[in-house]
Length: 416
Image 1 (cartoon, rainbow, N blue to C red):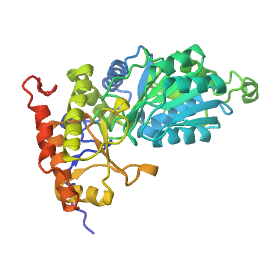
Image 2 (cartoon, rainbow, N blue to C red; image 1 turned 90 degrees about the vertical axis):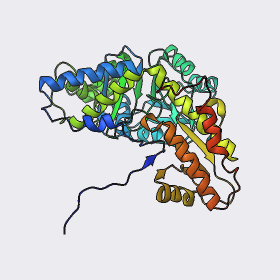
Image 3 (cartoon, rainbow, N blue to C red; image 1 turned 30 degrees about the vertical axis):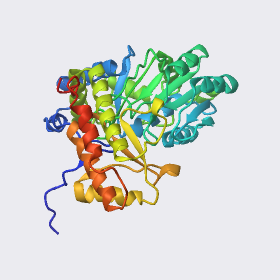
Image 4 (cartoon, helix red, strand yellow; image 1 turned 180 degrees about the horizontal axis):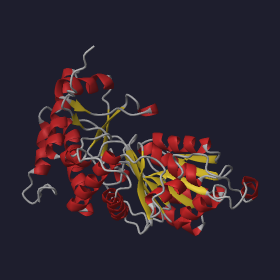
C-alpha cells in the first residue's frame, strides 16, 4: 500500500482549543535538532523559563514546561503536591473542575467539592467560607472554564488561602496569554497553563510555575529517594514519596535546574515552538494582547446578538476568549457545526455534559483571534442557520461587527 504526502485541509479554527498555530511558530519547529544538554539548547531552556516568569507575572524560581498536553501539567502538579489523605477542596463550575476532582482522588486525596450552576461562577466569599469550614490542605480551582465560557475571580480566594496556610493550585490553561493572570499578586502557589490555546503553539507542552511553599513540600517527599528517611518514617510525618516518575516535579527540577540531571528526552521541537510563541507574545506586549482579545470579543458578541441569537452565561464573569451561544429551539446543534466545517472550512465547538447540544462555543484565542476570522464565522453561521430554517436578522451580524471595527477612533490593537 502506498501512502501519500500529508495534505490536511485548510481550516479556520474558532474553537476554545486547539487554535490556529502562528506561522512563526511553525517555522521555528523546523529548526535543526541539537542535543538536550548542548549549551545552545540549555540556553534556550533558560530563555523559556525567563519568558514564562514574565507571562505568569511571578518572581518564582520554578517556571518551566512539562512535556505533554495541558493535562500532564495538571497531573504533575497534583501528583507532586498531594500526600495520600490530604484534604482537597475543589470548587466546580464546569467540566474541568470535575477533572481536578478525579486527578486528586487518583492520588489519594480526600476531596470536598462545592458546585455552582454551569454558566455562573462562585462568589469568592462563598469559597472562603467553605475553606474555613472544611480546613483543606489544598484548594484546586479552574480559572477559566472553556466548557461554560466563564472566568472565576481568584484574588480574594488566593489571599484567604495564604492567610490560612492552604496551598492554592490553579488551572489557567484557557486564560494564560489571553487575559490577565497574576500569580504572585493573587497568592497562587501553583499554576498550570497550556500551549494550544492563547499561546497559539501546538498541543504538547504544559508550562507551569510554583513557589517555595510547594517546593518545600516536594523536597520533604524526596527524602525517601535520597535515603534520608524511610517511607515508614515519612508516613508518620504524613508524607510519602511521589508515586509517579514522569510527573515528579522534584525530578523535573533537577532536569531544568543547574544540575541538568537526565530525566527524559526533551521534546526539542516543541520547546522551539514554545519559545517562539512566548517571544511573539512578549513582542506584542501582555496588556496589548489582552486588549486585542477583548476587542475582537466585543465585535463577535455584537454580531451574534445582531443576528438575533442569545449569549449563554453571566456577562459580568465572561471569559474574553470564549463566547457561548444558546442553540435556537428545534435546531440540531451538531448539524450546524458540521455544515460550518464541510461547507465553509470553519470549526466551532459544542460543549460537555448538561450543555452538550444546547450551546455552541466560539474561541477567539491567540492567532485565531483576528478580524477576518470573526467576520468569517459570523457570515458562515448566519448562512448555516438560514439553511436550517432559523429566522435570523439577515445581514445584520457582519454589519454589527464591522461597526465595531470601523469606528474612526478605534483600531485593531495588533494594527495600531
